[in-house]
Image 1 (spheres, rainbow, N blue to C red):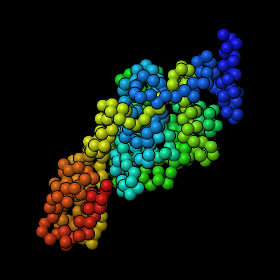
Image 2 (cartoon, rainbow, N blue to C red; image 1 turned 45 degrees about the vertical axis):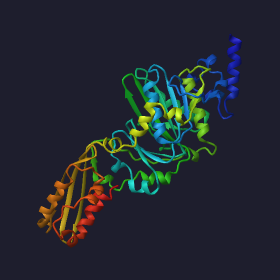
Image 3 (tube, rainbow, N blue to C red; image 1 turned 90 degrees about the vertical axis):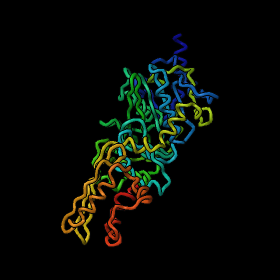
Amino acid sequence: MFCLDILRLYHILSYFSASTRLATLPMHHLRGLSKCYPRSYRRYTTGPSLSPSHSIYVSKSTNPYFNLSLEDWLFRHKNPQEPLLLLYRNSPCVVIGRNQNPWAEVNLSEARARDIPWLRRRSGGGAVYHDLGNTNFSIHTSRTSFDRRQTARTIQEALRHYCDIPVSVNDRNDFVIENRKVSGSAYKIVNNRAYHHGTMLIDSKLESLGKVLSSPRRGMMKTKGVESVRSPVVNLREYSGDITHDKFVNGVIRAFRLDYDIDVDEEVQYVEENSTSTGIEYIHRGMEELKTWDWQYGQTPEFTYTFQQTFDLGTISAELRSKHGVILECAFACTDGAEKYSENMQRWSEWLKGRRFGFVGEDVSKERLPWKQGELATHGELGEWLHHSLVEIM
């Protein structure tokens, strides 16, 4: 037995890249040598059926609706006492946190112009941009054993010892290099299960990231939900010319096997998006739910939106309150000579109540606006302001 373990140790050390040294390898990565024989890293399967009974999954789909629903299905159906790893990439999209305001987090018009959809995920945290230059990881454990420092360490060791990139973890549990963020994290805990998932910027289009995550109305809204914390970001490619999606995935798989004592014979499950996987009712319903108004907009926490404009006729300001995507009230104040329009603005206030925020334009196209006869033509500038503030917000 002693000779067998020595032989296996030799194979493990010879399997590491030339840049990895035993002196720099964490001690917890040397335990259980008899279970970590490196041949396991070459064992993969894309079996005909999808089961939540395995430990390591890599999605071959780049459909964000599928991947987020796959992640939730694995989270809900895996044995809660067993660890699980999921890795995937998405085509360009914006993903906001469960308790965020899309109008405050996403430049919706910019995203639409770039044909970039946005989704609301099922975990908390802030808004992130995904594309094929960004790899997503998701580590699931039992609630009692969940430790966000340990899950972060797994990703950190994957980068340091298998990708040769000196990443650190800051107080927010973000992964940073020289105080620039390469990954953000979010968490979810339900009953007896928990997960830590996050992004990893490998070679992402940072210009697109900056454009679609800069809402022009962010400063005009006060939300009771979670606001994203803006941080400088950088791609891993700036620090390693040979880092790729596959290299990161392989590094995370190795680190996960060692940290969570995954058996040598446990195969990596490559998941295809096909009739078998999307035919799983839970996944199918999840994909459809992510696209509904009730989930995308109806889950938006309460917020206040203030806007004002000064015209030749005076100044008109508004304070609108919305919850779950519906306008609760909108109070207009007319000053500096605009007081004579107070009655008209009161009609607007009543007309807006109960309508879906951001979708007022649909109602405008179907109904007569609450103006007195001839007023819209007389004060077109006022109408344009209301249109810009309430209709063009999408």
